Image 1 (tube, helix red, strand yellow):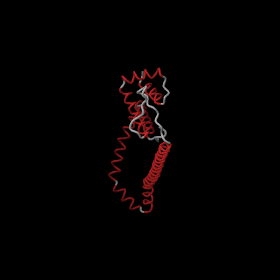
Image 2 (cartoon, helix red, strand yellow):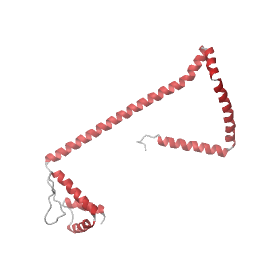
Image 3 (cartoon, one colour):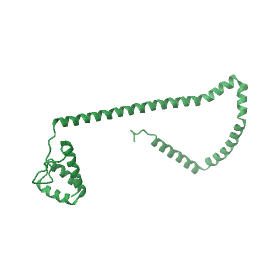
Image 4 (cartoon, one colour):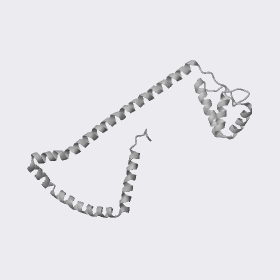
Length: 196
């Protein structure tokens, strides 16, 4: 007999619905299986807690049969009230988490918009400065003279490398495939948990 079947039979036995032919097979299994005996003890402990008495009522004829203890209406109502309170508390926690996520999304969207606005306004500010204050724009560009020269040299090296890459179609195809795979992985990681 499998432990899963034994546990089902134990529950049926506790409810008084187990056939006598199966009760003997169940007793044999319990005599050999420590896990199922522990399950019986745990069920007896739970029944005792529900009844409020430390010992379960055992019938004399069959020692493993636990008679169903009577549970008062007050105990049932208390359990229902506790369940309602727990459900209400869980719903409150879910609502609070939804509000936090909404606030974070709003703050993130605002931060991203401000960052994008700031980054996109830098070239526009430089253009306005170049139009209105030409001398100041030329002085600013002269400060970046060395950087611009380095950028030009770097661009020439990159152009040479890009020429090699574009000549070799296999290398370009591999690079394109790697970019597509990386974008797919990024999109998979950025999905919201509900979609996963």
